[in-house]
Image (tube, rainbow, N blue to C red; front, top):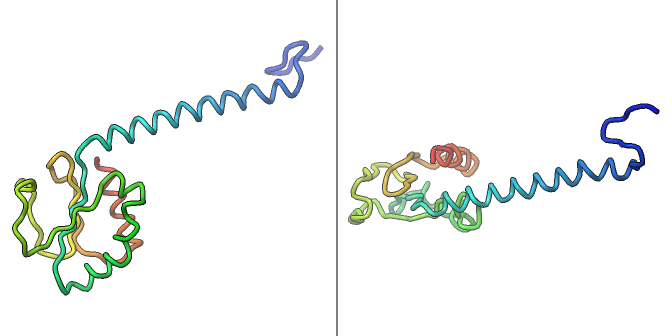
Amino acid sequence: MSYSPGLSSGSTGKQTIMQPIKQIISLAKWLGLCLLLTTSTLAATDVELLVIEQDYCPFCERFNRDITPGYSKTAEGRLAPLKQLDLHETWPAKYAEIKSATVTPTFILISDGKEIARLAGYPGSEYFWIELNEMLDKL
């Protein structure tokens, strides 16, 4: 009788195939739980994406047309909800430790009241998503 890894006498090929599949499913469930716990932990912190805007800013208008409508439905939007602020209005006391912007739009990622990263300007949706994900990687 020859030796085949994973086969014992009396085993069938179907049993041999099913064992690794069961292990993969078990691993996938475990990884899914880890991802859920990680996401829940990150969501528990106070993370926001501040967007500093002003009236008559064509890039702000473009951002609001391209990104704002669907942002809250994305993974990024659930992790870092948008908080839109006007450049010319009084800076909220909640953000006293965060330096305001001079260029609009400016995107400031904050976590627990501290600035994590900043992006000045909006050159388009593709670049925005790339930059935002690099910012979120710093959390």
